[in-house]
Amino acid sequence: MENRKLKVSEMKRLSPEQYMERPESGLVIVLDNVRSAYNVGSAFRSADAFGVDKIYLCGICPTPPSTEIHKTALGAEESLAWQYEADILKLVKRLKSDDYTIISVEQTHNSVKLISPDTLPKTQKTALIFGNEVEGVQQSVVDASDFSLEIPQHGTKHSLNVAVTVGIVLFAFTAR
Image (cartoon, rainbow, N blue to C red):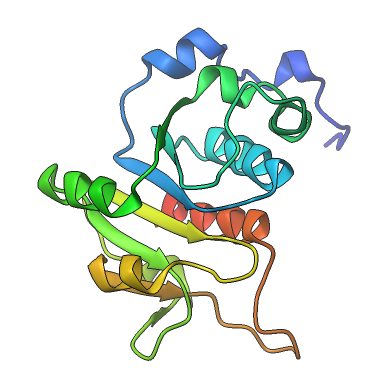
């Protein structure tokens, strides 16, 4: 069997119009004060790859249009629904009223360890909250969440880049 790389034309990717018209996955992500436009752009790109319905940009998050976001999103910010929300706690309350399970991706005393996709809840609608590069998810947002999810780490550092974290968690949620 030949193991050559696929050409883009062979990958059968959705067009931006097809992406916007596909059935909803029930998965949204919320960025809590993520400061770097490059991290926001990377989150858009990963969200597109894993079929996320919408990204909420909260607080001091940069928003499209942005050259930096576009550089890492590679256009995903144009096909993926997004919305800016100044007050993340009001957003969390609204998402809860819309039957979303709210999960803060954060290291807490009672966080659920992401060991495998089997450790994740099988909810119909999930909102994943990712925090900023220095402080993580705000404590008030963690308190308002249904639970916290933690990526186990075995090195000397206590955190991962937020864009890397988004990719890992989204992969796990779509693999369950």
